[in-house]
Image (cartoon, rainbow, N blue to C red; front, side, top):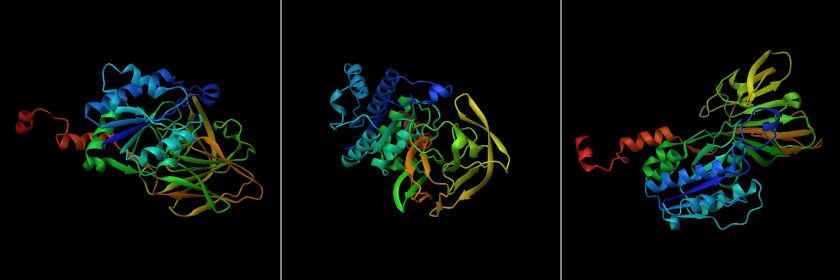
Length: 336
């Protein structure tokens, strides 16, 4: 059955960076509006079913209710699964969607949301929509187009040519794989997790990146200002912060542009573990503090080219056009 999934994080776009910087707050009513457009786009190409992750705010239920007079609501449902209001829900929903054969997952959130989703499934192609700021992995995408592309992908296997495999950073603690990051891993000298979002670079020692593009915002902008690296390049980037090698000017948060001293930088080779020397501390993943490293612990980071699969919307739409999938007028096809 050609089905797609929607995982929307009701808490995205609301972290501490709205207080310490100038980030936009994306409210849940707007997220409901986006889900509506996703549904309408997917059903327009006759996708069989749409599954939505449940959440405490009821984003999916409210979207379905608002569309009840315009669509066949039997083709859209909220997953029957327990929730606890944390990022674990996103991973559990992705795992459940994989088990029922969902072909594409549309995510709504930030870098952290998508990391949580990939902990549940790394094999289902993602269409990541940004519903916040400081995001690099997801993009600002119109929901109607995202739904349309997801529906086409689910029904037409040949459109898998539009899927790209991105990189990830594997995090090891005491030689055990404990986590991964999609965009950046940052080592900090702080001793406790506290507020999850990383925004103050004063205690940051090193930054590890899967991508570094100067037009992005956040910690990856540090690398983008120094040594640009595209998402599909088969390398990573390691930055050691400190005096001795000059400084870069980078937008690390909305409206927050800082001059950051970089001691040295180097490219990362896939499959090679890099030991974290400065312990104890914390490793923040995709902008959020996640892994605590004690004085007696060891930690390392490795670039892995077998990360999440991401849909290139432009490629899929070009393929769809080339295959006449968007044309319903037979006479027009003959003329072409």
